[in-house]
Amino acid sequence: MAATPVTAETLKDHEERLRIIEKASIEREQQVKELYTLMGKIEQMVADIREDIEALKMRPANRWEQLIGYLIAAIVGAAVAFIAQGFAK
Image (cartoon, rainbow, N blue to C red; front, side, top):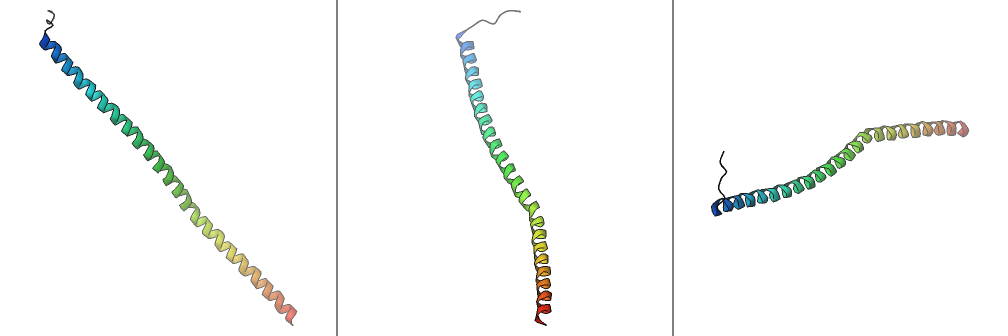
């Protein structure tokens, strides 16, 4: 296999190819940086969504606790009223 002769034209062609590759490499590097930034934002959004879901999960439990509190207050109120009636006689 014969070696390709090195001429000014082939050197210019190789230089142009290198410039194209370097430009593409720089563009890819910038794209990767942008993807990492976007990935960080997405991770934060997922964390925020998890917090919101946990808060929503707790809401029904808080409602039950509030209902139990009302029931206890009603029972205590009824007991106090019953006792007060006994003293009123």
